[in-house]
Length: 160
Ligand code: SME
Image (cartoon, rainbow, N blue to C red; front, side, top):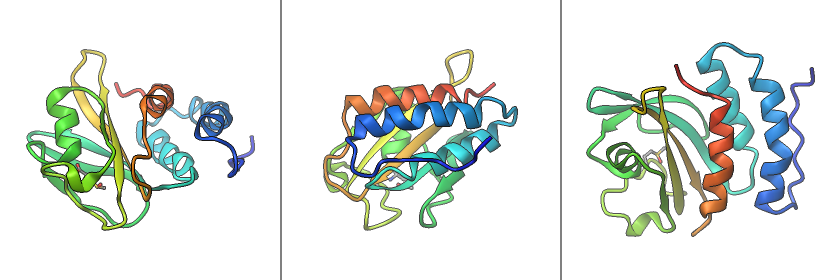
């Protein structure tokens, strides 16, 4: 199958998600390795205009440790007591931060980041095993629409 991702750069965010979802499904579903699926998912979502950093952090003890990502180099690890990612783990729910400078404890891995969304990824028992973190160069770039679609993408990387 083709391993090129097609995207209409001038479409709306929702149209882009709808265009990408079947392509992601075709690419990721046959792959049994979770890291391979996560890695390609970051590459797919990184195609979306504004998304300059897309990656996973794994929960390891009391820390979040960097997993597959696309974008500039990022913090390798930090405490789950910190940051937007830490809040997603501790509260076990999605965090949408319209302005990262206004979020107390935000960890600035890049000065380009203006807004951020972080979704928890749970295992079969409901425990948070990882998070998906997306940083945008645009202020207020994420809404519940992003959360809903990103949850569908995350179903394709289900962790065991
Ligand atoms: N900003 C995140 C840290 C990870 S970087 O954005 C890649 C946070 O506050 O949790």
